[in-house]
Length: 136
Image (cartoon, rainbow, N blue to C red):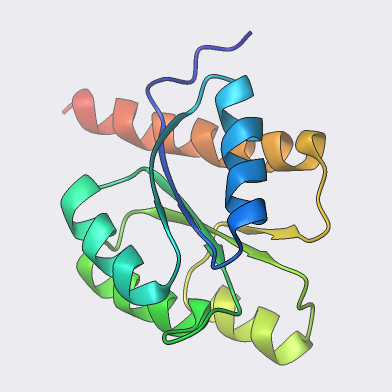
């Protein structure tokens, strides 16, 4: 099993089952899931307080959509890596998310391997940026 405890992850999705599934998948590979939010407003508070390395962010949520939350998160935490989690592959949505600086997509329905491969690729980048910063 990989040692991924150094990577902190926030899961943001309004669906309880999706959050639970992602949490179980990530923890099975030793990732540090530090929090879960059900909407964009709560996510913003948690990002400010918890400072995660990676955020898994649903696109379609009540109150504040994932795309709106993404823009706000970028303002308060520009360096956090964000993976959009969605069944929505609409080109306009994808394009807007990419312009806002996401690190990738996890398309629903997802499987454990796809989630872990995608998160691992982003975690590797997070570590290399962190390591480069510690060399200064």
